[in-house]
Length: 154
Image 1 (tube, helix red, strand yellow):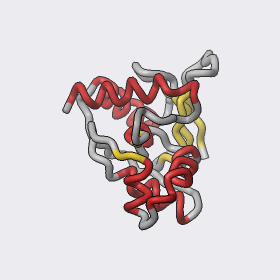
Image 2 (tube, rainbow, N blue to C red; image 1 turned 30 degrees about the vertical axis):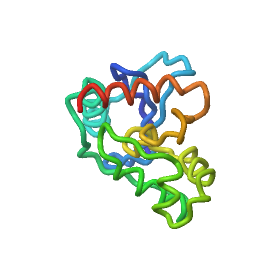
Image 3 (tube, helix red, strand yellow; image 1 turned 135 degrees about the vertical axis):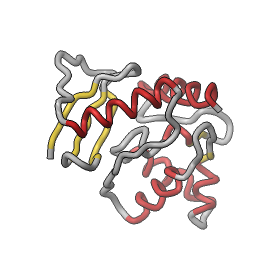
Image 4 (tube, rainbow, N blue to C red; image 1 turned 90 degrees about the vertical axis):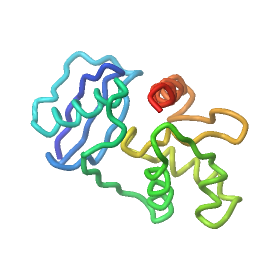
């Protein structure tokens, strides 16, 4: 497993990979980044595709990901991964797709456990009456900005 810090036009990101598959990707907006070390070919590819996404010139990714989690979490992430660019679903709509409209909170907890931001687009999941959360309250601006990028390019 390799950890690299990516420099993107949006925010620094920590990439965890096995050199050909993303195992983790997280924003580092609350942490001071002194050194970027996206030296591997794979990290450079991930960085390039993310920067294209942030510029609004890429809507899908050619990067392989691998997730670990419970069956429920994986089912939630699979649904979320199918939300089209520029579109959103509510927590309740995802719960309904899972067969139980009362699972909205459990859906939120599964999304909170997502270790691969952007590629599993949790930012596309919103509350019935508003934006909802995103990796905690400190990151809500990230969600707003990602949705803004996507809306402007649809």
